[in-house]
Image 1 (tube, rainbow, N blue to C red):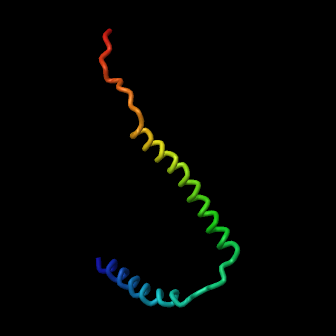
Image 2: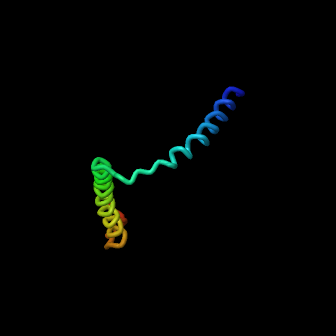
Length: 76
């Protein structure tokens, strides 16, 4: 248990020391690959959103639409 506590403490101290170093990095030049990647992710999101909207409208239409009552008894 003491070893786990020492490891956790050292990781927290390391994270506190390293995070401000990364915060100082600023790059204003986004390359072509960055924009292509973001566009690809956008296409994936839109590709998943369109079927979800179609299914959602179908469910709303089904709930609010005309219902046939099929609960009558059949005689055999």
